Image (cartoon, rainbow, N blue to C red; front, side):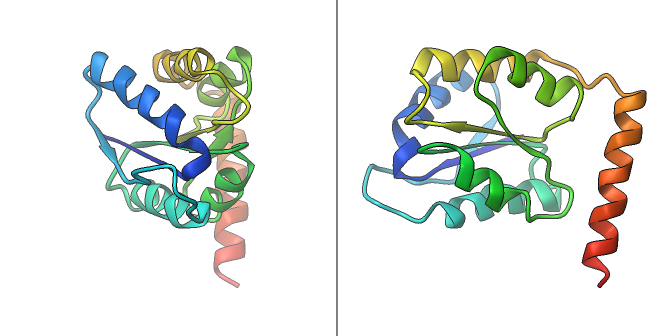
Length: 149
């Protein structure tokens, strides 16, 4: 299952992405926000990243104005690999090399067409493993050391 969330700056792009996910028959839960009124992005990052971190959801998508705040917030959660993407190449590499389980985008810096394309690329890409898995294992080890402090 996939979960998606945005703040007010990402709301319009999120509605476009939800339509795409429906067209692709991707099982998805929208965790808010539900409009363009100002809200705090960490609240929605926590909902999506919390669901991915706990295993409740396999994947997530987060959208705020630039994607920066959502990315920073989401990556505080154990096991989350939230990747802020800005072009087709970074969307593909986020999955193939980094096995990103949360895709992050900026609603104020991308067109709806770009955002939808990046989601399609990310969903259709596959983690390559191998040397990339070794690197993810190092990230996990760092995370475990920091958490155990």
